[in-house]
Image (tube, rainbow over all chains, first blue to last red; front, side, top):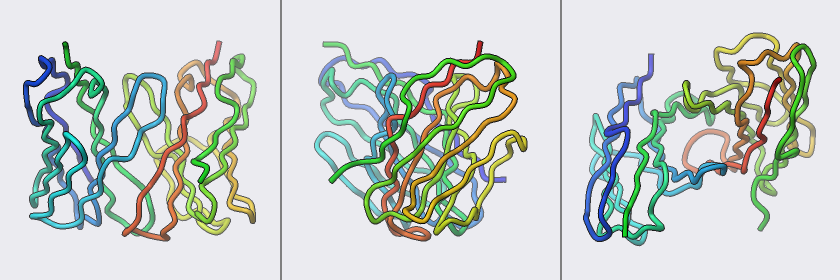
Length: 110
Length: 114
């Protein structure tokens, strides 16, 4: 059975304090690993898709990396507006089904 | 370009009733998936439709059903509502039949069962 585990569950950061979120997965045949940001009461907002080990993608203060067993989302010099829940998900079988991890709640204090 | 549109945004239903939620995918997208999000279980996959055919189904009881129309719009139905069905129901659309493309989510429909 496909499993996705995110850690930590919650993260409190000071503005400017860089950190990393972890997403470890156990799947049979990864087709893509997705990162989303979700604000309270809203739907997940797409951030990145990674397809193969060694791949990296960046967007503003966020950088996602992928290995054969896990992915990291690095937040560099975060600002209060980066406060959100960050979700990772894997796509394995044919089709567009995503299996999600439990998410990491990030709070950035000014 | 309009995003994924879900209606209604909020609704309250009574136990035993049924509910229908609607999703309009991004123009040109033919894959539509549905998810249930609760504080305890997180985001869980319900089912996926592509070109009016269901091709993936999650582990939910038969009370949960869906369909897709020829214009790619989709509906999901929950019959005989239970208190535990209270959740945020999310729709996602993709322009690819499988992989290699982005999957976008709508803002969701908040269902409260009383």
